[in-house]
Image (tube, protein in one colour):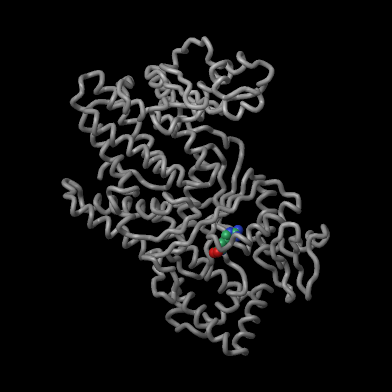
Length: 572
Ligand code: ARG
């Protein structure tokens, strides 16, 4: 399996391994040289830089090591040239015939050779996970989009993925909300309850509670009633959750996001007391002013409260219970959480606790920087709290304007709308995914919808243009056999060969941006190829080979975009 990931690198490395072995024998037992693509074609296609770090072991200058390795070797068919450069780099230029063969192999493999390194393993991805009874706004988009791309990447690698929407559906806010529902809404609002009404009720009730002690007390009582299973409060709570789920589902549908599970925090209620008991038994939790706390002296973190002095449990307690349940049920290889940067401490604390409890599952917090809008932080006070619904509608509206301005000949109104949906939603997703998750994003419509920069529409457009070229050719591109006569054709083939390894790297580093960068680079290489190499007007064999290259680029662009959750329409 492993060798398949970077087909060329693996074979070159195996060849060099034998040479290193022959030159130095026992001294290099078990050593496997690393081969990587060069930054610049003037150094060949691949290079091995291992002579440098080996100088110490072998007590020889690196250049001499490289010379001994290559001394008297004859070039294998896969290489056109091998050279020693600088202090001891081994630069490898591959034979275009061999490269074409490798690319054919990849194209024939299922899913373009994406390694199935996750086969037999499962991974839980906890993403989106919004708090119930609140409307989604622009700040909610990143967890959804990044989480969903990580989800798709893992599925592509063969993992069994359990995408779990861990709703914030429990806690003090529900006491405030029940009181607000009863006293701050009109009869009509209560009849046709929406998430917006719930938000109004919550804000009114919590504001009142700040100055009115009796009100606050009454909110607390509602909470206790709810926790004790009072049927009326329970039914209200249930209704709030159902309405929230309905509203969120509408958003996910538009974003093409599906979850396998919707287990809110409340699902783990019965486990919380047991978690605290276990922490006490294992000497991890101790009493402090009536509360149960965990200290992290060695780790230098602030204390975490796992049970409050009033007996209530905390976010950390709930997340430990969640790990316990997920490990029992799914025995996952990884549990991945996607939230904003402000929760880093929480995750550090409860991951540490889980490790001390003996959990060995890899726990990963993928955190992302906050999104601002036109240079301003997104906040209700600034008046720029854009609802997610409105953001998506605006993206689609703007895309439709662009499509209409570009004379969409022969496209029905319906097709234009569908296209606008793909482009608008794709633009928003790509803006997010093209950045390393940890960078803050300042959202700008111009950048998101640009047709010529590193944007979603640019990639969709590049893909659609290739599809139209293929359609125009009237030939089946599968018929052509590859020949890589020019430097740019070779570069394009080398770029295509990187796809499976990039998918794995993006998943293993939890950075969809690695894939986004790759796709942008590929489309740029394609565009230089297209500028320099006539396709339809080339003579027969070259034309067939170039059409085939084009179709492979289209295939990789569309699969890559799909892994980012972005649709790649054949026609724009
Ligand atoms: N509900 C939380 C929020 O809106 C995110 C939950 C993330 N998942 C978790 N298991 N803690 O901020």
